[in-house]
Length: 181
Image 1 (cartoon, rainbow, N blue to C red):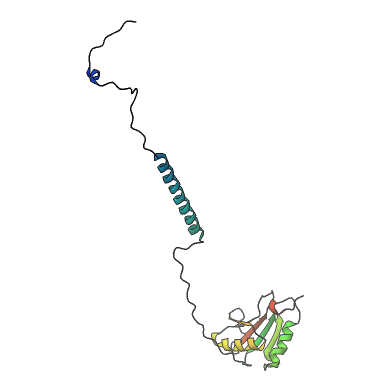
Image 2: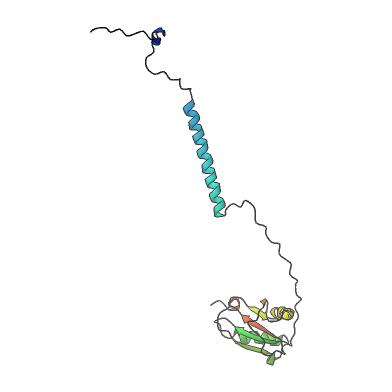
């Protein structure tokens, strides 16, 4: 093989070494571990944010607690037994005869037999309630509720008086007064 000679250039003056090929900087040690630690930390932070965000969105955690309204005290009405009221007693249970039994209790408490009417309601009602139409009748409704052995009282226009001159209280006997069958 013939030897060829090349013209002299600037690389001929470089001292010879035993290195061959591309020369890159050395990799610093532990660099892979640092990347892995940062990735693990980022994963933990993202998971925590996701869990916290889900709890907030589902309403299990409240950032600012909602203020609970303070109940306004209602004035207690002193019960008054007033036999001038007409009383209508409606049986709203499937048990027969409860309205008549309650009429006897009301008449025994001082109402005249003509002022107390007993009848049947069209549908069942859960709680025995004394209804009154005018706010001024609340004390009389509370008195009647005490006479019949305790009942809820409620203002309602559902049972208007039969005569505008005579105030009326309406007792609806609920299923809470029916005997267990």
